[in-house]
Length: 369
Ligand code: PEP
Ligand code: MN
Image (cartoon, rainbow, N blue to C red):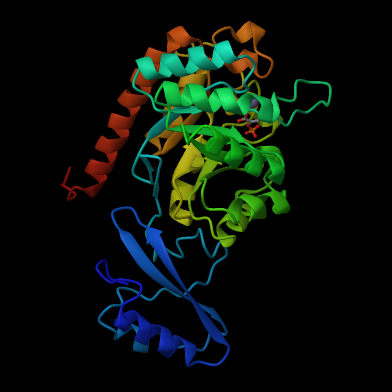
């Protein structure tokens, strides 16, 4: 519908009536947060193949009629016919046009480290972080995360240091409820983005569970050993449950061809995901690179990978820090140091400016060379 059309207006009612006059067709009305505006979308479901688009295009309130032909019905752009969907959550806006950094602890280990992390971010004006409470580990004998026990202090400290969103992985649907309860108990001191890890990218029951609640946004990490299309189909499970506040995260592919990195860095696919879907795109340079190797130019590989994601238009960066990586109980070898935080932020901003200049240049009229 056009921008100023309310979902409950008489005009929209007439469009719904026309749609439902076709046999075996039902409708759903959705209020969507687009890149620049909130918009009303009317979905026609069922035997829609034979319905002509013209009678709908004639309504003054209708902006565009898009025939959904591809997969990824809810998250897809359908050949560019649909605009990107962003969202605002707890005062932070995330869309295909924005960039938000989420530096934080891979896993919560002690209250002191959580406090140090959030305080360091606050010192640099960062209001978004990560903190893993439930860790899916390759070995059952590795540290599995502190679970629900750490949630009260993580949320309290986030509130104390002005952290608005904490990205936190869930590995079972019961974790969603534990997080929601702890948020209420904290007086909603902060917000949580539910992270679906690469190992659960095709855990369809978990995807349905996070999709059927719409209080908390979802960060969906691509499966490390499946195709992009399979990951997008899996992500569609979240959206089909009703939750449209989703960010799609690239985090590298499991392949020895990426050696000596932990995963094969896949950030060249940022524009691909932005073109195929309406979702903001995150990159996770820590889990992609997986080490603290330094290039001869003086920049860590994690900095380089971050830059590759941002210069390609990434909207969110999830990155591991730890005050004492040698003591970290999970993924210490890839964690950045606190003293590297200001340089990391500065480097990200330099690259973001380059990306914005590239976009401006692309939009400018072509001049003869
Ligand atoms: C994580 O972000 O802590 C994590 C386990 O990432 P991934 O699921 O991408 O391995
Ligand atoms: Mn990790």
